[in-house]
Image 1 (tube, rainbow, N blue to C red):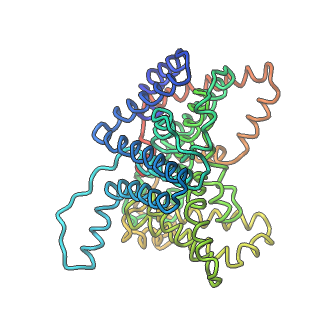
Image 2: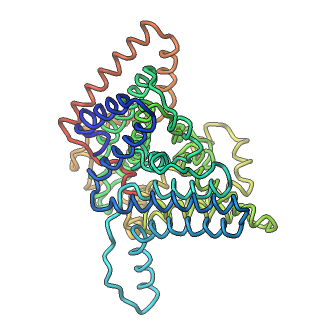
Length: 472
């Protein structure tokens, strides 16, 4: 049940909000939120509900085991429970997501043959597994105590706004709002605006660009000119941001309507002045997760190693970041590409870059980011050479595969609003209008209603496309 579906917008969401606030006590609201989230999951992926239940029980009980051992000052036992809890989460994720990938590697290097077909990926497993691991580690590190109430813990782990695509949230970030949320009409209005804005980004812009990019990347790269290749790559660069950030806006908006605040996940990443800056702005909660639970511990564990320590740690982190996105070599190489650039910036290039003109910093960043999305988008590694050949003019500026032959001329104008909504300009205009209040705010609300109605025409005429990051 995607957020952009008619069923969700006109049935699931309003019924959930009405019943949620109709309940008299917070504990009943938490139970209702859990049941609603389980229904949301079953609607989309009924065959894997046992995986979600397993994740709830593993993290709930191992958090309690760690807390009990720490109360008895049994550090060794607590540490053992920590690693068992983390290991069970990784085993769950690895079994469903990476078994086929690693068996393919073994078949390639050993005289073995496995009769194995990769299992379907449970909905949101990469996201709720990482939330579970963060809970286990935070309990062990005494960032927050173990949650003794199973219903309250479940409401944190499986709440439907963040279940499928995040943001990846630590319990300490939302515990107060989640457990003590109150009905505030202003939250409902602000959340609705945020939801509508995200819906428009997804349906009007990202889904329209996807029609063009799907046709371009399914074409014969041998017959593609540089103009079309660059258009396809730039369109995909905007599409993936608008799709994922649109989902995040909708998730945060729903959370706000329910009375709690989810963490931000994007901060206009395409205005970055370096790749380090980009990764502080793109998928912020994933970057924070890897920094908190992997990079910082690696830095501490290897503090005696001076030579290329930070660079090596960055490469390790981003290889795993790539692998988190998918069990495929293109994601691993995309992660390595980002890790290598970050390692170069950490070796002194980043300091030199800061001394150059801002326009050069932005240009450098956009080129590196955009080229990187080609690795991400094209899953067939053997096709990369053909695509990059087309990109850099091996087939001329134009060739047999053209905008007209693919019937995508209609989608070229979508680049302009897509670019505008990828920059802070529209956000700053909206913020200034909100601050004026009064009639201006009423006009702004009216414009959001018009935007919502306009977005509905796209949904009704074209249906809805799945969110891109739901595949991860």
